Amino acid sequence: MSAIASVPTPNALVLTTALPLSQHPAAVYLGSLSRGSRRTMRQSLNAIARLLTQNQADALTLNWAALRYVHTAAIRSLLQETYAPTTANKMLCALRRVLKEALRLGQLAAEDYAKAIDLPAIKGTRLLRGRALSRKEVQALLAACAADPTPAGVRDAALIGLLQAGLRRSEVVGLDRCDVELTTGSLTIRNGKGQKDRLAYLPRRHWRPSPL
Image (cartoon, rainbow, N blue to C red; front, side):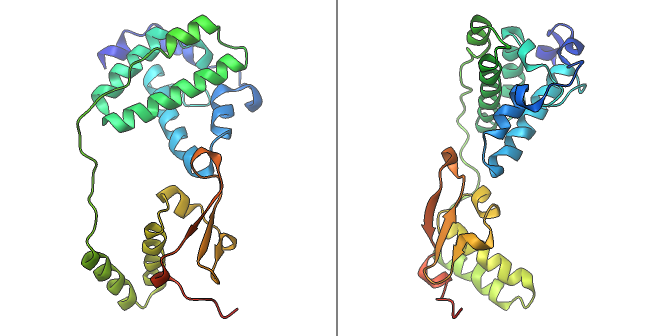
């Protein structure tokens, strides 16, 4: 915690008056995200806010416009020590985006913004967690689902099918019934990566034309 200990007056970073959400940099940024990404980035911003204020603030009570390079450099140092490189860089990305909204809202001077976001990416050599499953392993999982007489068996088989269609985890949990067309096996992905809608298709073995 030495990097954060060097940050001056953490309590000065806590908002004393609540901002309207339309004028709050973090709220504006989070509002621009898809539903799946919003929760993840809110958690990242909450973690950063708590680190900067010694648990006195969260994403909506931190005065983001008061951050300067001394704060962001300290956060980068701590994230590098605490998180895997991918996670740390994702959190730094959220931080930069919030500061950009503060700039756009006229709450942060351009020079202060440029200095605060001038942070190199955190490099690492860790391999991705997990591995690709073999065809036999996938078949074994589907067989286990088929042998499960409870609704969980049907649910788990559906999840496997959706993931094999190339959906991200956040896209799977964001699907509604109206987004699934059983006559064609098509899936409408709404507000996916880059706020774009797209179509995906279930593997043929995972669906059959609906009689309805």
